[in-house]
Length: 155
View 1 (tube, rainbow, N blue to C red):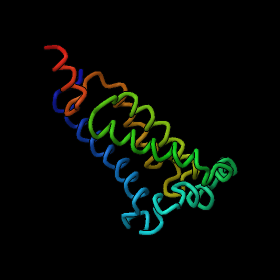
View 2: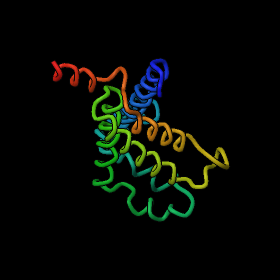
View 3: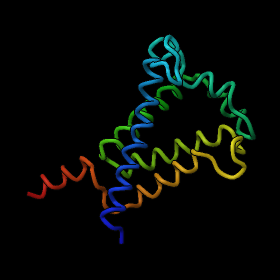
View 4: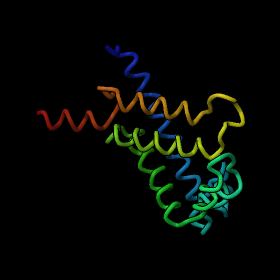
């Protein structure tokens, strides 16, 4: 049985990870100057997947990633995925679906460079995926709009 403290710790981590996804979406969309330079944003006509998938991938799946790099369908799926996953985790709505989608996305991103280059066994994408699996399996979600809607419907 999860304690109240552990549920709040999971919620805080869920919200932080949601912010990571949202930040990625906004930075790639508007070119906020962090990982996406000003003038290189999606709104500037630059593919959010093009450069990374065509130049930065390595390993047995590199050919597959090269073949989908810069595709408008892949760009839209990627960006809508970042936004949807980020909103789901950050706001605490449709958490299970957001966590499942986030798990899939982080595994796909982790496989872009396989085996990992900065650690021979595990990288941050695997850690995110494991946490998202834990969130999707959690029976109760603290600090979520989902709970607010449940309480208002119960009364």
